[in-house]
Amino acid sequence: MHPQRNTGAVFNQDRDTRFGLVRARLRCSESGNVLPIKVHRDPETGKLLNLVFVWADEGTELKVDIPVVFKGEDVCPGLKKGGFLNKIRTSLKYKCPSEHIPQKLEVDISNLDIGDKVFMQDVKVHPSLELLSKNETLPVCKIVAAKLDSSKPTH
Image (tube, rainbow, N blue to C red; front, side, top):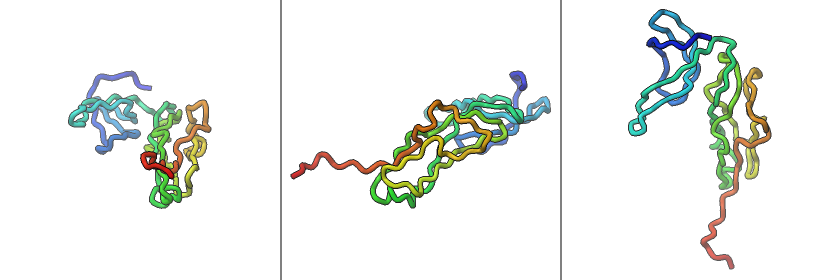
């Protein structure tokens, strides 16, 4: 690990709000991988104000929150029947080597019907990732039946 430095750096990163591992070159000509751990934005404009990075040399194990992205909504049987996707978790926390940090976790819901769930243990990840949850059987999402309109009287 590198000690904290107070020198300027040049970073190559797109304008996405999620960041992954980034290659950095310091003005002192040293380079290495860094991972953004805090992003500070102007609340009104959304303009990036400050980024806080941690050095992430190969093999360094880090605890990271990885965003969950759902795919297959367009063909999901439960959604086609009028149900809706209850996104219970929007990210999952893992301990993993810096070189295997995924930008996102894809959860495929294309085969789910109303009442079906996807659990943390069902999310496919690289074998070097360790889920940091005490209960892997907690759901990530569930297809829920649409609520009946209770304002209409029943006969």
